[in-house]
Structure formats: C-alpha cells, structure tokens
Amino acid sequence: MATDRNVAPVIIKRKKVIVADGHHGGAWKVAYADFVTAMMAFFMLMWLLNATTEKQRKGIADYFSPTAPISRLSSGSDGMFMGSSVFAADVLPRMGVGASSLHETTGEGSNGSTDSAENDGGQADAFQEVQDVLLGLSGESMVEDQWLRHVVTRVTDEGLVLEFFDTDEEPLFTNDAEPTKLLREIAYAVREASKLLSNEIAIEGHVAKVPVVRINDPAWDWSADRAFQFSDLLTGYGLESDRLRRVTAYGDREPVVDNLMATRNNRIELIYLRY
Image (cartoon, rainbow, N blue to C red; front, side, top):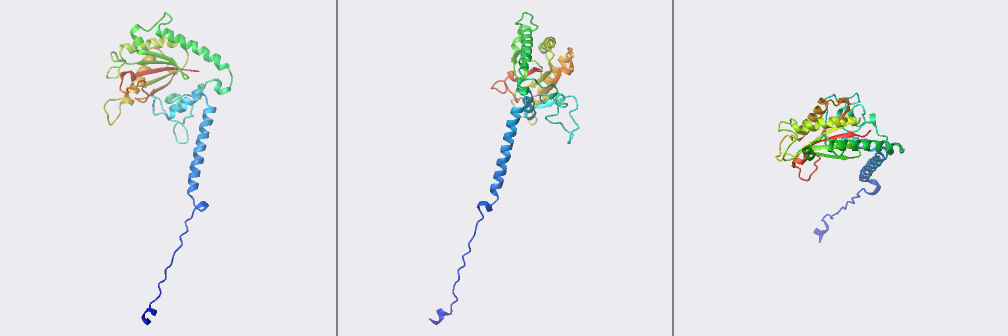
C-alpha cells in the first residue's frame, strides 16, 4: 500500500481547438468577389447589346471569333501597346475584323428613327436587282446555266451575300489554289453586277476540314489563298480596290453542311455590306 501512494498521479490535458468560422473567415470574400465580377460582366454585356447597332455587334463578334484576319497592309496603330483595338475604326477596315464606325449604320436600333426603313428598302431593291441579274430572273443573266449550281444568294442583317462553292464534279480552284476558268467567269459577272451597287464589299474564304490530322493545319492558308485570289480577280477586272472593306480567312470553322469534309464547305462568300 505504501508503494502505491508513491506513484505520481497521471494528469491528462485536453486542448480545446477553436476553428475560426462565420465572419472570422475570409473564404466568403473570395466567393463574393467572383459573384460581383460575374454580375458586372453580365450587366456590361446587357448594356452592349442595348447600346450598339447590329453592324457594331457583328464587328465585336468577329473580333472574338476564331478567324484569321488577313491583310496586305500594315495592321499596327499608335495605341498604348502599339496594337489594334476592337473599337479602332481606322484600323478595322484594313485588318478585316468586322464593322467600322467610319460607316456606321443609321438603323432604327441606333437612333430610334424610322428613316432607316426607307434606306433599307432602297438597298433591298438594289440587292434584289443584283440577284435577278446574276440568277437570270430578269432576263438579263450574266451567269450561264452551269454556274447556277455553284451560286447561292441570300440577304442578311449584314447585307447581300453571294456564296460561290465547289461541287464534286467541278471545283472553283485547282489543287494549286489557282482559279479555274469557271471562277474567272463568275468573278467577271460579279464585277459587272457590282456596278449596280456602291456598297463596300467583304470577302470570306472557307474550306472543308482536312481528313488527315496534321501538325500544321493547312485550312487557314487555303482559305486565305482563296479569298485573296478572288479579290485579285475582282480588282483585276476593274473593281475599285477601296470598295474592299475586309478579306477574311475562316479556315474550316464555319461549315454549311454536317459533313465537315464535304466539298460543299469549300466556298467563297462575297458580301455587299449595308450602309
């Protein structure tokens, strides 16, 4: 019994851990900051949609879309970082990345007036006349019958679109990206039809997807070559070069049929831009 009394007592210490939570933590601040940033971006988007015209929205969309603006002119500017801006009106027409405020639209979305309806009506009549001439609906066709299999026309918010595309039987370009006789005839007809309008012109090059995966995708170069070849044909036949607002390569990013490798996706789009 004496031995048991000499044993040192066992002392157990229990440490109370207090976890900081509630307003003492900082995690909620990060989440709140992300939320405020997202809301700010959302309201800026809503403001842009309401404050800009259809033509300006097209320019902004083209700026962020995966396309390759191409130009033979300098694309530099005198901005802070010596680059171009989405709102640089004096740079956009030379880069081919969308609409320009140099010739902004007078649509009712921009100033609330109804005068633009009359202007659009006049342009619609002019667009229809060009379509009639090219497709032979007016009896003055400059397009031979076999051409009609390569031509589609449509009127959009951007303007009158003339789409010229390959067929399995007859392409518009050779394997060396040289224009065929058919495309040269089409270009001449387009040049003659362009005399009916004074609108500026945009040219877009599109190609089908390459069936074999390659390290360097040639679609961009092919579409750029096609676009420039067609623009050279037009200017060679006498089209004023200052009417060319932009020349753009889209690669294989905007197919018109579900089969990405279909020949139908090889096409040139010429757009008579609205005023």
